[in-house]
Length: 101
Image (cartoon, rainbow, N blue to C red; front, side, top):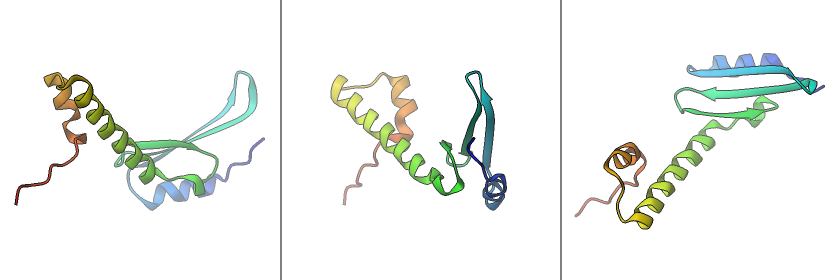
């Protein structure tokens, strides 16, 4: 069975607002299984971890933003245009245009 330092997760949550930890113990095929989910509501990012030292939600958040920006660029290249509803949904992830000097 993996040992989980619950106190370190409690401390991580208390360090900053909008943090959340979920711990599941046991599974249908393995009573020793432990899953820890770390989430930050401000970043809207989460990841499964075994210890607090593995948590890097800022990187996860940036990776998600980059993936959405790449998806936006791919859609523009593929279709030449995006459906207005999809365009509005993806607008926050569009790369910023340089302003004319």
